[in-house]
Amino acid sequence: MRAARFAVLPAWALSLPLGCSQHLDEEVNALHQRTSGLPVIDARVETAALHGYDGAPRTPDADDPAIWVNPSASGEGLVFGVLKDAGLQVHDLEGNVVQTILPPYRPAVTAQDPPVPGTKPEGGTSACPGSASGETYSRFNNVDVQYGFELIKANGAKETIDIAVVTDRGCDRLRIYAIKPQSSSGPLIDITASSAPRVFPSQFVQPSSLQPTGESPGVHDNDLDDQNTAYGLALHRLEDDDDGYRAFVTQRNRSVVAELALYAAGNGKVSYSRVRELRFNPVFTVPGASAGSPSIQWTPCREEPESDPQFEGLVVDQREGVLFAAQEVVGVWRVPLNDASPATVTVPASRLVERARSFGEPWWAVPDDGEYACEDSAPVTPVAGTIAAPGNPSAGGLHLERDVEGLAIYYGEDEEGYLLVSSQGDDTFHVYDREDPTDHIAAFQVEGTGETDGHDVVNVPAGSDFPHGLFVVQNGQASGPSSEDPINGFDYDGSTQFKLLGWEDIADELDLDVEEDEYDPRDPHDD
Image 1 (cartoon, helix red, strand yellow):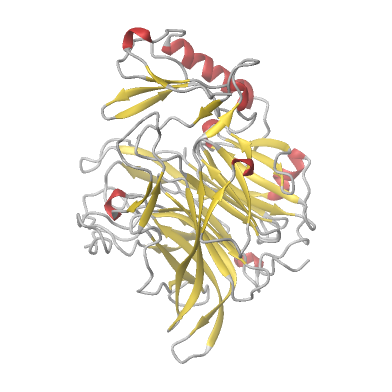
Image 2 (cartoon, rainbow, N blue to C red):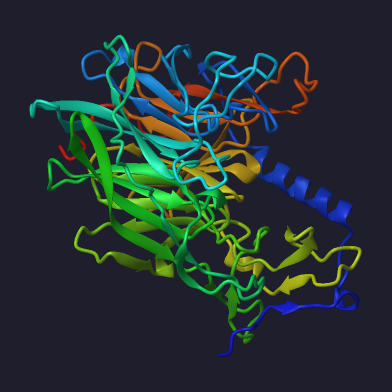
């Protein structure tokens, strides 16, 4: 059957089904009903709140955490947390800061500017290589760890180390760090090769036919200053190749994931090269809203019409060789990995295994100063040029409220375990069966935690406070400063932190398994 199409309506043709305030009240009430009965788990440890100030140089904004397990003393495990413009901090398992990594390319900070991690005043550096404006600096977005990477030192000798890898969204590169907690300059030491290339020197553009920009579809050059750059990240150690380490990287504002090979570049440094690109079509066929009606070619509304629906949260099932990818306004994809795949892979829509609640819903894109306000009901006051998109509300999922953000895997025996997903739109966390991620098992909230971007989990003991595993979440609603007045002309813009929870606290509340002996993150393929 012929698919229904979207239409741009004149102002007088817009229907007015609901007042804005009434609709907002209904949304708030519905959200409360969905979350009010969920278990709320307390954190055992919290890091200090970091206070952000809009537009301030090197202002902190905690985003994604990663857990490192010490091979010889589990009590010395560490949590790495990216802070965007402020770089990265290393925490011990009591929440104390043990190291601050400043971004390699950063603006100057004066003594009068808002507080930042590290010292101030500080003179800063040059802008990112390739920044034509000279005003684009490093911005650390996601972080992940892997174990047992083999370096080649300057004398040709080999050294086995653990690594932490960060996406530098500002400079469109990966930063690689050796994890050496006993080193006087550690725990993290930058070992990125100076020749490390941009991750996305080009971009695969998929314009929306409903919100046209005039840009043609296909591959285009990618100006660094436009920031369609490296974003989300997950690392993978190949089962059949002891030296095979991969980094999967999402591209901001694009519906693609790049697969990169990490390799020892000599002189104790690490670099990477492109293996392939996974491409995801942002247009989906959903059933018509009523029996016998034509199917609908549905695509998410775009606030910025030139931006495709992006991914951020990623995790690789190390044992099964499967990539889970969270497309923020669409849902969770499950993509089996195959090292024999071609350089470009178009991922079929059948790999979308869990849809966001808003998937497939009708929407209205209301013009707003060159962009759009995306609404799920027609505006009360008609606005010329509003785009009305038909949809089918029953096409959406039942559990995840956009944005769909962080992903992590708790490993059990063989194929058992859980996929953990953060639902940012309603501040909830969801537990799915690892083998069958269409099986939703449970949901919970973390006390005093909201707007979560990323999280991580390990099943093994992590010190005396976490003898049965550790779950770490980013909190986008941390307590604010004593005064929220502007500093040096910069307005206060929210506070963030990380929270550490014992896995058994979650498992006991939700009747989940505790499998601390079934998986070793240092040897993921040992059954």
